[in-house]
Structures are given as structure tokens and as C-alpha cells.
Length: 130
Image (cartoon, rainbow, N blue to C red; front, side, top):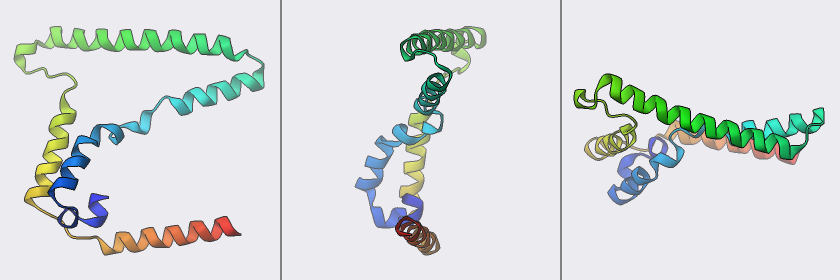
């Protein structure tokens, strides 16, 4: 939205609010729900009971969370926290660096991008109506 409309048009208050919401959409490309849904669909086709699959998924999630936390602690102890190991604290820095860039170097509206969004919307609506 910021690259399309431009940070100059949105203003400081809106940009700050977008910064506070940045964590919600930054890395949702790896959301587990589509994989779980696909697993349930495959289980339905193969004849596996959904309850058994749900229990297996919960066990896998538990093992995965414990393994990830252990790996983070292991890295912190091996590298040493005093050496600057920060773990997973990059999102606040990343978010507010983006905000600082938007505020210090405000951008204008990207007309070409808006035009292509309009063309894509028109094409999609036309295909939907056909």
C-alpha cells in the first residue's frame, strides 16, 4: 500500500499504524493452515480418520515448537549472548527502520502501479462475469 500510494500521501500517523501492524503480514507466506487443510483432504481421500490426523498434527506441532526453542537456546549458548546474539528480535528493528525511511524520504504515488492494479481488477471482474 505504501509503495503504491506513496508515503507522502499517507502521512505519519497512518505510516506509524502500519508499522505496528507489520508483524502480522511480514512472514505469513509460511502459514501452516494450508498445509494442514491439504493434509485433511488427502486423509479424506485415503480413508484416514480426521481425529487421528489431528492428534498426529498436534504431536508434530509440539515436537516442532520444542525443537525450535531448543535450537534457539543452543545457538544463544554456543555463540554467546554477550557476543551480540539477538535471536529473533529483528522484526521491531526492521519495522521501525522502514518507518524511518518512509518519514525521512517520503515517496510519491506510483501511478504505473495503480494503473496495473486497475487493469488486473478489470480483467478479474470481466473473467468473473463471463
